[in-house]
Image (cartoon, rainbow, N blue to C red):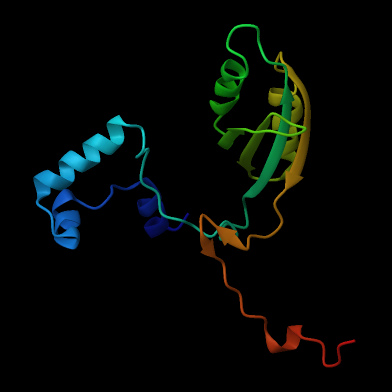
Length: 159
């Protein structure tokens, strides 16, 4: 991985001094606000927004999972267990035909398939899954991924 990108992904956020300068607040005021946001569970971490198509060696997929709610705990215990897998980037409880929506990543399609049939589908309480591979990103976390079409991509005559 690009070392600058790796530093951004694993690095620290702006200092409270830097944030205070930008916001016109004291360092202490910024630190108090950050601590409050962490305690309230609003601020979970710091990550730059990366174009998901950047790394061609990573395959991402959305997996819908139908699970059986447990008598005590409903969907939570199984959802939390599934969320602990390293490959799971995101896990949401949702309405509709499936109960959970996962976003996962792997080095190739085979690894995603292996995760589904070796790890996920074998868990007690998992009833069924539907896997959708992400082919192309148009927007990521509110940011459009702009791509200008090359002139040679356009047909000379269109119907």
